[in-house]
Structure formats: C-alpha cells, structure tokens
Image 1 (spheres, helix red, strand yellow):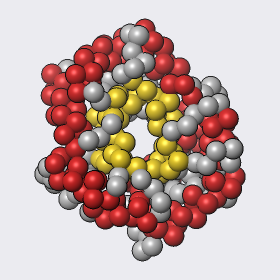
Image 2: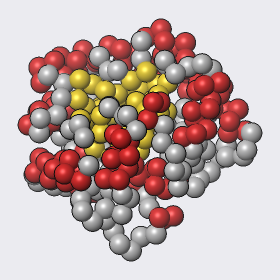
Image 3: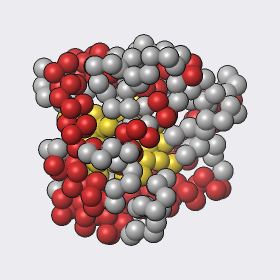
Image 4: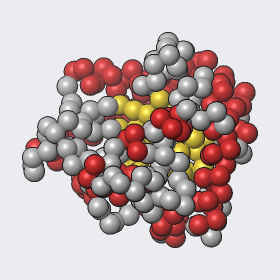
Length: 270
C-alpha cells in the first residue's frame, strides 16, 4: 500500500495567519494546502493580495491545491457569476490549482429534475471560465438531507453530460460520504479527499453537523480508515486534506501534535 499524501485545509487551524498555516504544514512534512475565503480576519477575506499568498507559498514550499469555496454554485445568476470570476482570478493569481464548488444547502432546489437542471446550467457556465484560467472545478456534494446536491453519482453524470472531465473533478468528503449513504466511489473522477471524523457516540447520523467534525482517531464513527483504504485500493493517488470544523480542534494549543497523531493513525490503518 503506497504512503498517504496528506494536505492541510486552513479550517484545520483557522486562527493561524496564512504564513503560519504554511509553516505548520511544513513542520508535518506536508507540502500542499487549501486556503479559504470564509475566515474573518484572515486571508483571503482580510484583503490579502493573491501575490502575497503566492509569495508565502513559495517561501514555505507549498502547493496551493484549492480555494475553498464558491458557495451556492448550483444557483446560477449574475451575482454567482461575479463571485466565480473573482475567485477564479484570485486562484490563478495566487497559484491555486482548483476552486471548490459547494452546492446550496438550505432546503431549496432539491426537487427531482430541478436540481439536475440547475447543476448542468451552473457547470456549463463555469466551464469556459475555469478553462480560460486553467483552474479545476472541484464539485463537493454535501451529505446533509437538506442539500441540493447530495450524490456524487449525480455530479459525475452532469460532468459527463458536458464531456467535462478535464475541467471538473469530485471532492470525496469522508463526512459527507457517510451522511449521504452513497456506497459508490469515483476514484477516477476524484480530485481531492477531505477527511474529518466524528467521535461523539451520542449524536445520530442524521444530526451530525460541521461542529461534530474532529481529527480522525481510533474513535471515529465514519470509518475514515475504511474509506481511505477503499479509495487507495481503487486507484486514487491524490491528496487527503484535513478539514475539521470542531471548536475543540480549532482551540488546540498544539495542533501539530494532534495532526501528527491523526496522520499516524490513518497511515497505520490503511
């Protein structure tokens, strides 16, 4: 079994300035990161220029895998087009390889037929924008019952309908994969894997939310180890990016030790 290739999403340590995030990754032997546009007081939302991000990444030897994320991407309108263009231009200027695309998650747009049409419309509009910039679109279905795109199969079908595998890849998020209950893996269409665990023994699967998402340990209820093993055995050779949302992780005084332990657990389990 090949060794796992890890990455660090800024959500793993959202209070760290972006240069410190890069330094943290480097201290763990990780050379790839995901930056975010939803962290108040931090890059990108604080006005940090893409050039400054690119310079910091070069200094620390980091590859920027993605900007996370264009929200409500499958609700296409003039505002969304403007948001997409701004993020795609930032991605290109800072050297990011991809832009994560997150569907609307408010209970709307879920009707059969409607959601597929909305998805195809958005992907068709995004394709030339992404292709011009040389940026990959990473489509991330969310497993929540209220989400307008829960299924990776639906996303894959829409991508293939546009003959757009060179533009779009899937995000396999271990949390959302478990919540969606979708058994099929799409290793050949997967561009990135997000990893996080849920240890709380009391919460039901239907009630699991982002604040439950911790680093993966032996107490994990989502079978991250099994999911990672299955992806690797099926041919996925990309990155496994830590994306915990729990306050208990964000408040850690020594995130490096906790991340190193989780990396060790997953490597040994796979």
